[in-house]
Image (tube, rainbow, N blue to C red; front, side, top):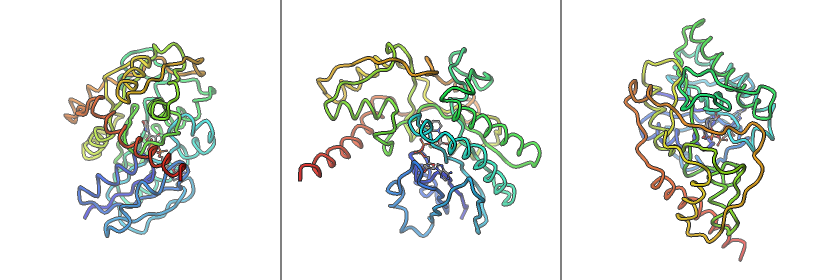
Length: 319
Ligand code: NAD
């Protein structure tokens, strides 16, 4: 049975990855310090014989007694609200945490896939973003802590590949959504859904013309799975190129939820990217990967998840 260590296992993406690798017949070792994750995301795995969990901060020395075939590095605060609140932890997990896991991969002769992000493109001047674009990041802006942590993560991963022949894979993830996102993580999708369900107006920052592209979590997980098993070691974009403006997106949520709320506009935060859309030519040609779940279907599934949580909360509050 192949063994895989998943760092960030209790988070949104890490927990879906645990499910996927368990389903593929792997022995999964989850690791997380629960900084932004939730143990409930993986509790259902605890009784399985091929799952174990270490409560551990990967910025300190990482020891795993088992042999390992693969390591996935998905540990990091990921939403702006989290990394603005925890700038030092974010830089440390991108730098020290990545260094520790690369050292572990070297020692165990394991292949490691690290999670980078579309944020390394900053506020991009080319559109859509190909992997060859070097980005437009303000290193000392508020988002710099996340963007530069991830740029360092890519550099040190490349260095371990070149200097120590560690088998490395790098994914640049674009906005991903789905069940197990936190309702209060400050990202636009859960915020709109919470506002619609709780009867608040939907808030847009800026004039609503800025665009994003959203990838459903199952599509992303499939891309990660395929990239890990491929022999491609350079960074690869994985995301859904279907782009939408924030005003149109708000309208989609209003229609989906049937809310009678309206949209209200606030000032745009500093360094907020105006456009974000992946060029996925590499994923298509090298992996044969394309996203399969369109926004209508993905939003329906995510809405169901959020609605259940909020209905339960409302019921608990009324008793
Ligand atoms: P998340 O916050 O839900 O999960 C991150 C997990 O990492 C949490 O469980 C947290 O407790 C854990 N963690 C943080 N610091 C740690 C440390 N020092 N030691 C051990 N565990 C630690 O975020 P997510 O959305 O699941 O993101 C996972 C990864 O994917 C991150 O690296 C993020 O940068 C990357 N990413 C996510 C997206 C997205 O759209 N969700 C986009 C681009 C990149």
